[in-house]
Image (cartoon, rainbow, N blue to C red; front, side, top):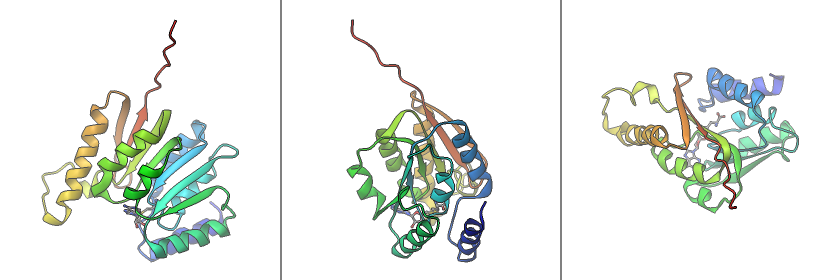
Length: 202
Ligand SMILES: C[S@@+](CC[C@H](N)C(=O)[O-])C[C@H]1O[C@@H](n2cnc3c(N)ncnc32)[C@H](O)[C@@H]1O
């Protein structure tokens, strides 16, 4: 990891900005090393740390689109992306992902869901629409401090927990997906879209 990236990570941690945890990043980086990936969609940019990390694994000419609604974080992410000279690689959509996602029509090889937990089922629906055949969806924080797999039911987290459980149910029951859940970071759901062979009409 280069010095600029290390400083960026330290600053984010000092300012309590939630960024991808090292073990989660390791899992995704390994996937990217082993699978050619040209287009990534990220939901939840924060200050651009994960997008910048992912960018070093892209195929030549690859691109990352990332969505963030917090103005201060957008400004810092733009600065970080500029410092890393990645303006041609990483594009930030500024605004709420709930409004932006339905306007997108490109296809992506990988989607990284890392934003409001209460919106995960909606993000999944949009990710499936935008995912290439054979593509992959990573959803971070899926176990939410262990609440998702326990009978924890505090009011403040209840909606998030219910929606994370719904996400898990949908990805595990969807027969076009192969899903595993890893206990890295705060839980990572990995859902791979099975390759659907094209049928040729005779
Ligand atoms: C966990 S942080 C993202 C961290 C980043 N992916 C990284 O690892 O460096 C989540 C970010 O998602 C943003 N966010 C949450 N809900 C959102 C929404 N509905 N639309 C856009 N951004 C959202 C928050 O402002 C926050 O900066």
